[in-house]
Image 1 (tube, one colour):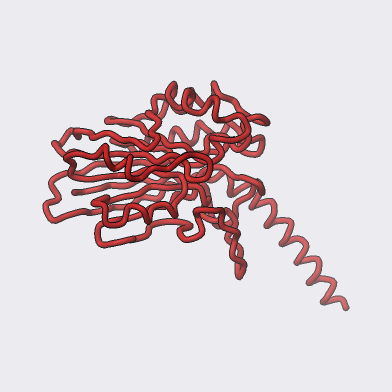
Image 2 (image 1 turned 90 degrees about the vertical axis):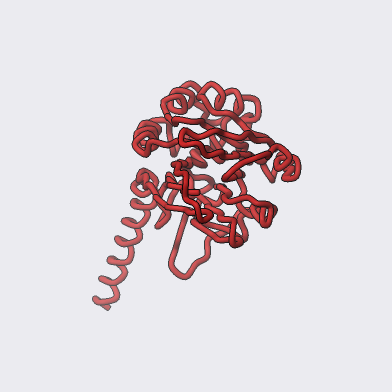
Length: 273
């Protein structure tokens, strides 16, 4: 009986410590995932693309944490900085717009800053402020459109953005109609499963968020996957010989404001083409 008692005590203590870690420690960690992607045989051009996603500010993930995000983003020295949706978790309950604008404005990129709509950007009052907030922060919000960039080393890069798949009106064909001559093509979307629409379209990279990487990676238990993140959950996928998809785990939290073995993420890509 005494052994069972001590095992019970140890189990309770372990559970308490696990909860403290998941709710108070890991959500405050910000990791940077660095990847190198290569396209084609010439390798004449190189650029750095940095992705931020799903900040989902809330009372549980407050604006106080933005300073660390800005510092880590700027340390990557991006040519192109992208945000793949979900600025606030529930804007009507917690929506410090001015603090967010200041943080977005402080994020730097030598060539351009781009964003797309996420599902939370259409709900809880966010639709009225999202695009203006991002614009004031120096980001161009793309909705089924894109533009071609002339990089400093002479390469041409097309960057396009889809509308949100849950609450917007996604139009991949309309988006691709904006492409003309380019050496490399990047598509931004909030929901990752829509990336299949770009297989065999001469697209090289799709960047997405939405899934939070599962947010809670518990042993032997598969975390629920949101709609349009059923197929692709976290990290790098090779969808075809030419097309890669990267699903960023996001920075904030939703529903359960905890993370376990899926720390907040900034993704940074060195791309040669």
